[in-house]
Image (cartoon, rainbow, N blue to C red; front, side, top):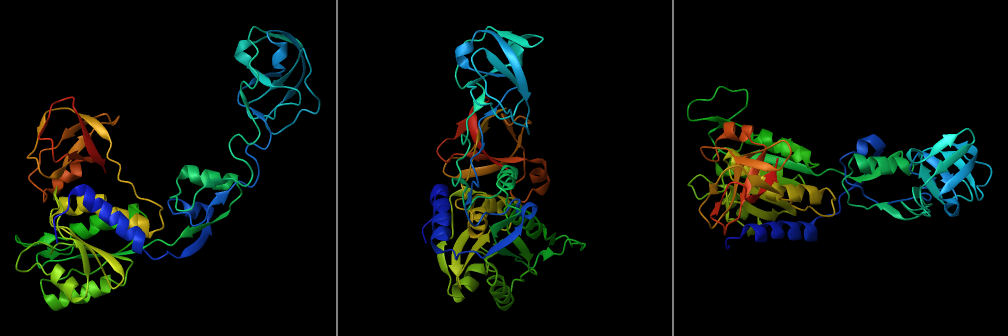
Length: 397
């Protein structure tokens, strides 16, 4: 297989998963349980929103043709009520934010722009028909789609569902994601490792990343550097909707993952991407299930999940699209790298998100530096240097 650039590899993941994914099952859940889930059917407005023209300010409902001037206050209307009469020329009704606009009125004058004396109110505001009035159906007309299928429901989406009377919600089932770490050097988290062993941190970080993106992680036992044992666990992993393997994808004598997958009839889409960390990266499909062979160093595992496997988790969960957003921030100091690869390096983004500082690190196994980071710089492959104050892309964590 040929080596892929970062953009081409990313596009390959999205296109393959969208083209070949099976339709996820649909389940109906209570409204609050739908948070962060993917909507399985469009939601339409059950009535006009707002159902009546309403005021968006506290003030006085008037006829615009009466302004400026002094008006007779003939009543009051507040949210949750209605004014029974009609506003005529030279008249005003005191109105509260959210209240329905009385018949005859076509402008609201903010209370700050009036002077009241008993039952009379004066204002120098000019006539502006429609000012501070939210017309009927201005937000959504009855029957209009207000939340599209394939949308991951945020707090705003939950508010819309509640507004339209949805106590239960159809959502897609969350995809199951098997996580398989490989290598004789890996021991359980609660073990005391010998000098040549490491605890299984990758499976834990991947489980968190999967759950954040709407998947159900299944952490499998560690696959030893033995062909039969690795094959047994890979077959187990392919029973899930997606398989993530950590380690075993380089060219070493005991890197068995690609051999095992090939024997299982896998179709490989790519096995190397021009990025750092994470060049040896496998993406393919076997027995009808997608898999990623992620590099075993912690930074490589974390980065390649976020920029590639995350999209598969979201799309398999029914999300309509999975854009990778790399915003910009200004560097606090000069930064240089060897061009040719898209590099993702640990960094600290300041509180307002406008400035970013690279974090010194010792390579992709440096977990302490990763734990201090809240972003990765995304250094373009064609640009070798940036100065302090230059804009640079970053991957938020």
